[in-house]
Amino acid sequence: MLIDEMLHLFYPRVCTGCHSLLAPKERGICPECIASFDAFSDADAAGYAVKEVFRRNYPASNQPESAWTLYRFHKNDRLQRVVHAMKYEGVHRLGNVFGTLLAEMIAGSTAAAAFSCIVPVPLNRLKVVERTYNQSEVIARAVAGVLRKDVCTDLVVCKNHTRPQAGLSLRERHSNVKDAFTPSGNVVPENILLVDDVLTTGSTATAVMRALESAGARQISLATVVLAA
Image (cartoon, rainbow, N blue to C red):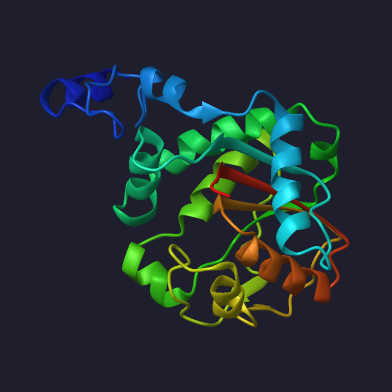
């Protein structure tokens, strides 16, 4: 649009990863940065890697029905800077970029058609106030836009203001989110796609899945942007 082009001329947008100038139609991340991220070779490899996290850390819990992730995490690379900006610096448009890429991966699967709705991992309301938005919800809405599914943010609630999970051990992560999530009381469909930004030990996702399962969900798949295990 002409207005966008004029705004870009006077207020140039730069890439969150490398601070290079973005082209008018580029949103948040330049193609060079995206190409530098450690992407999984295909959806099958990504799904196997995600499920391996749950098999290793939560073998007694139900595993995700299907799973997807885009990138492997590495410290101090461009992806870490971009994800940090999305989570803590208010650069919410990055969630749209990642959500669209994630949806393109999911759309090629047979499981996609069966989802009743898409559920973002919820944040405690105080954290939403602190960050001004839930980055997982932004990602989920972008996924939903491509897959043409509804987003349900009212099925499970984060009732505790938990500590940040970064830097905690597996045991500490499990304790931190234990009983943090509870069903809202609304009707929960049987087949759900759960969406989060980063998966490390699976503690948060497992806690949310347990809450959804207790309310009637039978098949829960998981999509996350980054695997940091």
